Image (tube, rainbow, N blue to C red; front, side, top):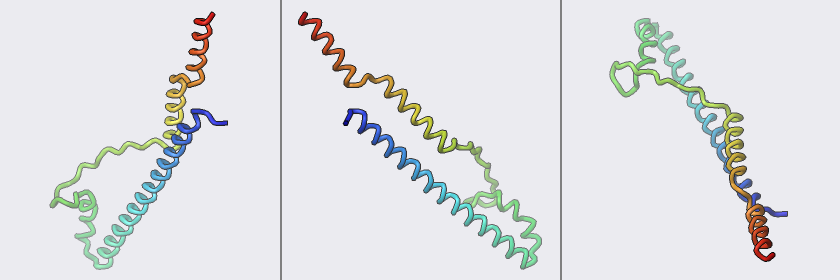
Length: 123
C-alpha cells in the first residue's frame, strides 16, 4: 500500500541518517585531533623536563595561551557553548517534521473536500 506520505518520510529518514553519520565522523576527527595535540604537548613537556630547562618549563603555561600565528600575543579564549546532544537534535527535527506535516492537509483530505462540493453541486 503506497501513500503520498511514504517518499517524504523516507527522504527525511535518509537525511537524518546522513546527518548522524556526519556528526559521528566529525566527533571522531575532533577526538583524534585533540589526542594528537595532547600527545604533542606531553612530548614537548617531557623533552623540556629531560633537558632540565627549568626556564622553558616555567614558561610552558604562557606558551600554551599564546596564538600560534602571533609573537607573544595572548589569545582570548572563545566562549564555547555545549552543543545539544544527538538525541535532542533528532527529537527536535522529528517534532518539527511532525508539526509541519500536521499543518499541511493530505491529498486525500483535499480530494474528499472536492468530492463533497461536487456532489452538492449535482444535487
